[in-house]
Length: 62
Image 1 (cartoon, rainbow, N blue to C red):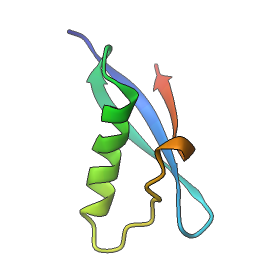
Image 2 (image 1 turned 90 degrees about the vertical axis):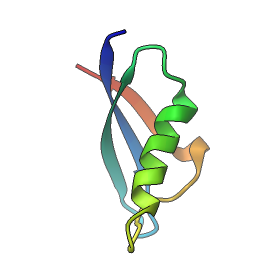
Image 3 (image 1 turned 30 degrees about the vertical axis):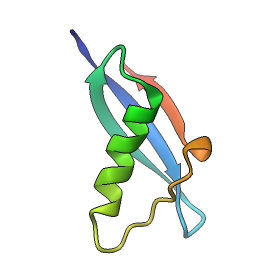
Image 4 (image 1 turned 120 degrees about the vertical axis):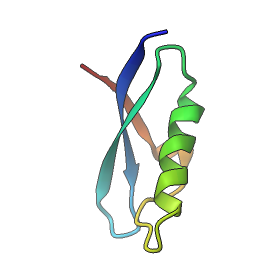
């Protein structure tokens, strides 16, 4: 299956919005893309991203 690039933008606690590139199969669920980004941001000591799925913006890139 071909992997596609997606941009996942999450609002942050500082009022900004941060974008993260995710590579996933074309049939990946939006929740899976969100979980991939959320998991990588919360692993950092100083996470800026908020964890609200409804506030996430997910778009295909390229």
